[in-house]
Image 1 (cartoon, helix red, strand yellow):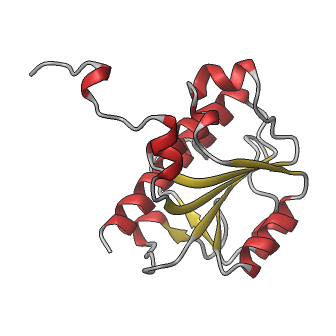
Image 2 (cartoon, rainbow, N blue to C red):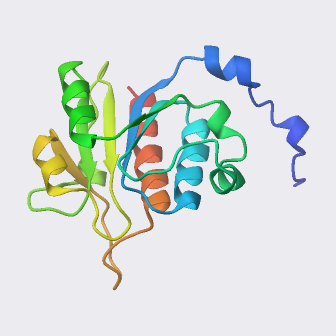
Length: 177
């Protein structure tokens, strides 16, 4: 086996990315403190052709040197928008018939491995603050909550890791429809 050079990977350029059909997933980042987490979510979103990212509350926005360091240019490809109030974003998306799910640990959550996607449905995923998680008010507005099964001693995963796991899982389920 030989490691491929970047030039052999046949990736899209920025114009091709912008014109490409997007995966029907929207990511909502609410009160994310770490600029590296924000950049990492941008990079994951680029990899899976995510439709849009909403940056809410205290979540920093591009252009930002520290976000760019992790995003590696994905802030130029993935559509994003800043909105101060995550609740207003959730309400608007639901009014637009987007199914909104928080990614959190709550009573009656749906384990990620049990979550079933519906054909022709657009999804929004809410990821919350690194310490406090998704705000309870936001959880109440969501259509449901997806939980990542965890078997170890820690109570949570890093937000960028959580986003990568959930996006990959939904991406492959949507692709299989």
